[in-house]
Every structure is written in C-alpha cells, then in structure tokens.
Image 1 (tube, helix red, strand yellow):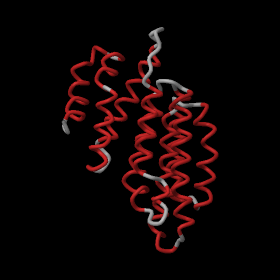
Image 2 (spheres, rainbow, N blue to C red; image 1 turned 180 degrees about the vertical axis):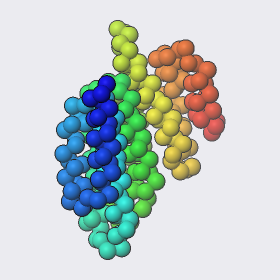
Image 3 (spheres, rainbow, N blue to C red; image 1 turned 135 degrees about the horizontal axis):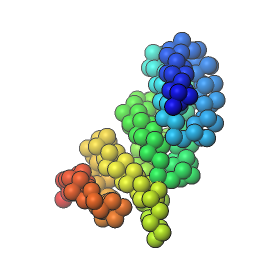
Length: 215
C-alpha cells in the first residue's frame, strides 16, 4: 500500500512537471511512458499522465496554430490517431479493462470536439464517418461473449456497448441520426442484458431512450 501511494505521488509530480517541459520533452515522455503503460494497464496514474502530456501538445498547437503549416497540423492528427490505434490494440489484448475504455473516451472526445473539426486542411484526411464506422467495428469485435462465461469477456461487452452509447452523445446531430440507425440493427439492449441481466432496467434507460429517439 505504501509503495502504491508513493507511486501515485511520483506520477502526480510528473503531471506537475508537464507544464515546464519543452515540446521535445513532452513528445519524448509520451513515447517513453508508452512501454510502462503497456505493462501496467491497471495503473491509472500513468494513463492520467499521458493525458496531461497530450493536452499539453494540443495546448501548444492552439497557441501557435497561426504560425504553423499544415504539416504541423498533420503531425498533431497523427499523434492522436496513433494513440487511438495503440489504445485499441491494448483493449483487444487485455480484455475487460475499464481503464483502457476510459482512456479511449478521453481520446475520442478531443478527436471529435477539436481535432476532427479544427485542423483546417488536414481534418478531411481523417473522415468523420469512417471514424464512427471504425468504432462500431470495435464494438462488434468486443461484444462477443464465449460460452465459457468468462467474466472478462462480459465486462468487455459492457464497456464496449456503454462506450458506444456515450459516443452517440458526443457527435453532432446529423451524424448522430446515422449512428442511431446502425445501433438499432445491433440490438445493444439485448447485448447488455446478456452480459449483465441484473442491470436490465439501467440498460433500458441508457440505451432505449437513445436508440429509440429517432424512431
């Protein structure tokens, strides 16, 4: 316990140092901490540290946007997309880990609200519709529950389904109608009730209203 507490304090100190780092140091730390995070996926402090690093990168971009070419914009996009791809690989390797899905929510939120819409000249290279379709494919690949009733697969199905429900609330209205149509075909309520029947009333409340709102 004492060692874990000291570890938290060490990561918290690293987060404080982020604001004093140069851009090169931030990028170096983002790369260096990836290996640790891959081996310690339950250590939420490391993922929090990575989020601080990425926010610093985006903050620097916002302050200097007028002074940089589309090449720099493209680099920002690639950093975020690379983190999304890495996060997806971890999700598929370490089944049912909530910390990985929470990290994906952070990445997706900033991708939708800032990067996919604000980086003029490069955002079209990362098609919004293709991004949503990819996330739905991730849902499909993570929602299969084997017959052996392995709890981690049940957790994975719940995390993937609730992530998609959350995602529908983050996207603009025109795209939301399209994703709701696709979700009706996937029958999320049945999936969630299969994975965790004791929460059926909660699933009906979360998913039913969202998916049925456009019927």
